[in-house]
Image (cartoon, one colour):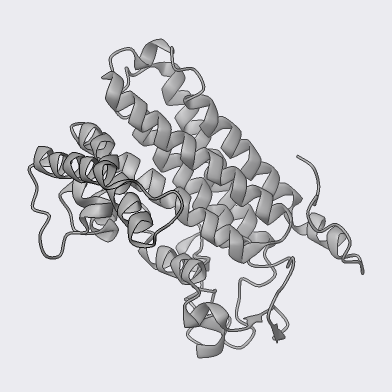
Length: 318
């Protein structure tokens, strides 16, 4: 891919140092995206023939969305834009998690699709209340409300207190964290802490407006590229790609081709985690030596060599 098309001229040898650190892990990251994308690139592949068409449509859509936003993460990291990359990974994680949830219970595909009527009604009602120039007429709003109520009734779910019907009512659960938890029982990685970290960046929580501290203890507010802390979004995006791909093929016809491809994808994703960890100059706190909480050690590093997370207040929360 093109090198640094967004912010090419910051001088002082920054990009040469950046490339020296990150060429290899980001190269493996791009290969991971390419391989993950290939699983869904042929909708007529024979191993998908046994799938219900509606279910296949939903899973392929969510897999494609994960791959698309993974490319967004890669583009941002290639330009050293780390905080925006965290926000993009958040979308990858949500898409992959919902895909796994539906793959575990295929009847959810139909409910997921019908739920768009509730979203349509909410948008139309908001436009109507704000007197927006695209607001629907009274008749159109009544029709959309009827369709939304029909969708709710069709789900046969309780949309009462505590259930965010507009977002996750189709699932029968109250919120995304419950969907997330239901997909992690037999999974080696639980992303809730990183998701909270990324959400703080997306919503400008107070923890997200604190200065960033580099490997030399200097603090500041980045307004452009940095060449450290790429590990978290790079590693986690690859794990999201694995999860989305597992969801895509969960109910496909098992073939040797699929099995080999999935092994290759898993190996590539793990290499990104390890290479990023080893490349990142800001993994470790200069005071206590612990690792930053958004960059947990990859499994390939022996337990005896894994440091504890940093507990220093100034370093652990930025």
